[in-house]
Length: 218
Image (cartoon, rainbow, N blue to C red; front, side, top):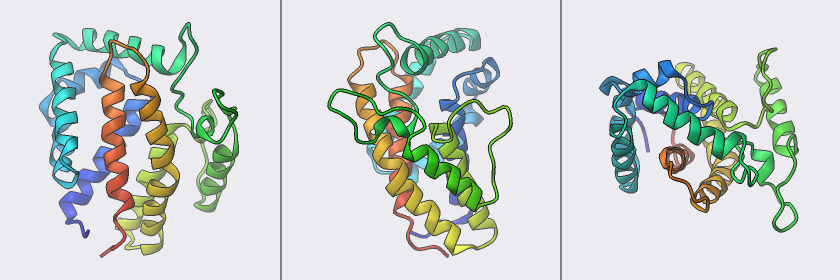
C-alpha cells in the first residue's frame, strides 16, 4: 500500500494520540476529547483500516457520549486506567510493558526490564535518542514504543529514508503487534465496567497491522 500525503499525516496523528491515551488521562486531554476536531484524524484514518475498526470507533464514541462534562470523563477514565494498569486488589492483569508478555512460567508474568526493555534501549541508542532524565517508566512501556514508532515514521517520510520506514514496518509488525495482541486478550478477560481502554487497544492493533503491512514506500 502506498499512502497519500494526507493519509501519512492522519496515520502519524493516530499513532501520537495512541501514545497519549496510554500515558493515562489528563483533564486537558479529556476537554479535547469532547471536541470533534480531536477525533478527525482517527476517523479519517479508519478509511485505511479493516472494517472492524469502524465498529470499535463507534463504540468508543458511544462511551464518550455517556459523560456530560470533561471532569466526569476524566474521573471515569482515571478510575479505569488505575484499575487496569496501576493498582488493583487482584493484581495488575494487563500491564503496559512488553517485558511482561515474554515467555514465562504458565500463569506467571515475566518481570519488568526484561529483554524487550533492553532491546528498546539499544534501538534508542542506534537512532541517537534517549529517554528524558525524569522518565521513570521502563523503555518498553507501550507509550514509549509508540513514540519511537512515531519517530521512525515521521523522520522516514520527511527524509524519504526507506531504511527507517522499513524499520517502522518491522517494529510495528514483529515487535509491537504480538504483545499488544496479548495485552488486548488480557483486557478482554478482565471483568470491568470500563470499556474505553480495551477498545483503544483493539483499535491500536488494527493500526499496527496497517503499519506492519506498509512494505512499499514511495
